[in-house]
Amino acid sequence: MTFFSKKIGLSRSQLNLKLRAITGYSTREFVRTLRLKRAAQLLEQGYGNVAEVAFEVGFNNLSHFTKIFKSHFGVVPSSYMET
Image 1 (cartoon, rainbow, N blue to C red):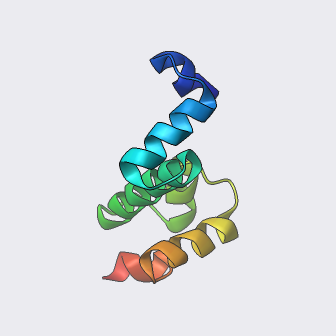
Image 2: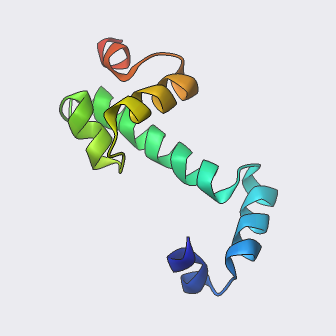
């Protein structure tokens, strides 16, 4: 987040406060949501298997990705691919 805050001329805390005011999410939650939405798009497009998609969107731990994905979408990534 330091990279982004420097690029837009805000401190990390200012960025977090403004992002939360606009989106209702913390910076971490906002980025995680973007990554999960991108993962869902890749799965829908048949980009690759679940592990490849997880890695592509920045998750290095497949079980963590699966857990977070399920908490966000209500299904595990492999089931999401089948829908």
